[in-house]
Amino acid sequence: MDLRAGGGLFAFFASRAQVDGVVAAPPKGGAEVDEPIQQRRVAVLFSAIYVASLLAAGLGFGAAVLLEGGIGVRGTVAVAAASILPLFFFVAYALPETARLAAPSGADSCSGAVSAVLAEQAAGLALLTETPRRRLLLFATFCQHGAAAGASALMIYWAVYKFGFGMPAQTAVLLVGLWAIGLGVALLQGVFIPVFGLDGPRACVAVIGVSACCAAFLALAFEPWMVFVGVMSVLGAAINPEVRSQITADVALADQGFVQGAIQTVNSVGDSLGAFVLLVTFEDTTDDDVAHDTHRGRHSIRANLIWHVILGLNFCAVCALLLVKESPPRPQTARPML
Image (tube, rainbow, N blue to C red; front, side, top):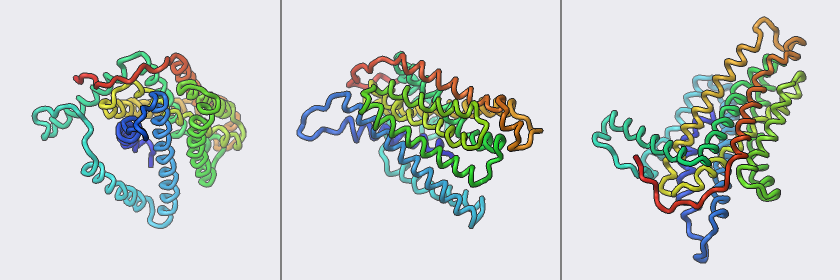
């Protein structure tokens, strides 16, 4: 099961949390809360939602391993599909609609529904690219999504090719990767921002720096133990909730749904492109004639090229984040939609 498949739900709950649970919630005693404090609450809440999704992914992975041994792969997939149905009905019928675009004529038809969805996506993308600050943040999260998706998709295949990892070692790598992202969130929200006093974008740069150091380990890896250090490179994904909150910092509350959905669309494109580019790179830089876990395979620097590509994506994200300026005040009225 792919954690990124739940990204749309993350976008929805993030927008509802920002509108209903944090920014719009009146503080106790009636005193106004400063915008920076509100923004920090949003970032922490986004991160909490993200960590909860990681915990759910870890539980799902463990449950899938147990179920597969009892009812097989098909039965496990069927159980996973059935477990999503209650959530589908809850989202479809229990949660209120947040879109403020007027439904086009014929919206009850298939073509009308598609037109409405495209109009909402266009509105969100227009908001995302409206200012240089948002464009830089969007580019940073796009690059980081591509790097994290490529690393998570190819880590196991690369470890098997280089070191002949069996199922126990592969499982350990996946679990360490999940824990690494949680560690990245803890470093970002618990150390770099409150302790060192970094603002959001610079704290994200610090997290990517840690991630890049771990990826550099894999770029030169020739021993199996180095994989368990290098897998920590996925902790760069921990910046995504913070960047998401930074993008929406100067967006009116009524526009949060559009922007969160558009961010998820862009991130999904980054996931797909990152995984595809790194897969092509992996196929082009590995030799099928080389047996797994051989001296030649272990010491092949060419087979490590995917980690050099990931380092390049991290560098692009860092450059964009360093150019981000302070957020302007949040507008009180929504932007006119297309």
